[in-house]
Image 1 (tube, helix red, strand yellow):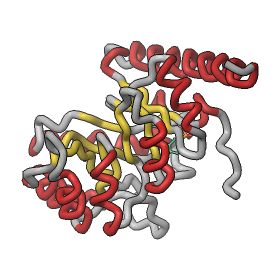
Image 2 (spheres, protein in one colour):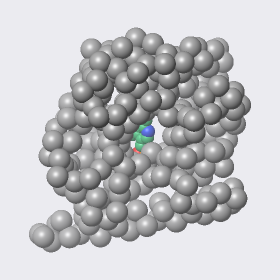
Image 3 (spheres, rainbow, N blue to C red):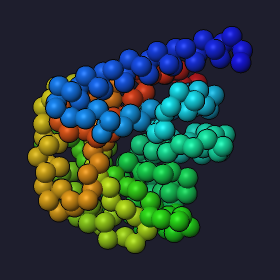
Image 4 (cartoon, protein in one colour):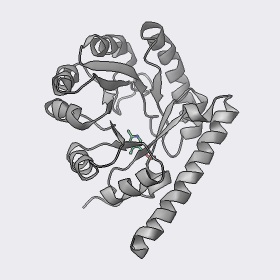
Length: 238
Ligand SMILES: *Cc1c(COP(=O)(O)O)cnc(C)c1O
């Protein structure tokens, strides 16, 4: 290994240890088992060489948010045993392609994606795991981050659950910018309770990023999606 690769490995190892400590502390504070919380390391903008180092450091779940970048990285890392989470905005004409390489699609936020994902999943051995991304934007706020509106969640969840090649495994959410994450994730708890009453098997809750993972875990997250706290600030897009 080159000196630069060695230094990067040490950096990732230390960052990962610190995130694992934060997760463990937050789980204990919430009276939950830290082992029940999965850290998905978001490797977008970072090279496949980082994914390799992470796999070697025991990371099993990685997240990507752009289709072309994800395709390339999955191919470069084909020899590694990893679960690839697609967490980005999804165009309906790319849905089938994403279903071809992702192990979990976390950003299912509209009915239009269901048939494409289902078609792409037909060739798989089992159904494709899907999370429905729900919007936590305060009601009536104009600027939407991605996610289905809470009132449209039941219909979308049922469409995913009823598809023979898709497996509804839970919910995903992103706290809105500029709002206290405790308030946003507080709204998520109520949405999820109702969701679970209709889909009791779909217990995954992917919520929480580098800045708000403690709040997400306090509100029931089973998966946190961590980018910068492990990999550092993302490079500027050229
Ligand atoms: C980039 C991204 C993350 C990771 O964010 P960090 O703040 O770097 O931890 C998590 N979730 C989604 C949907 C993202 O796009």
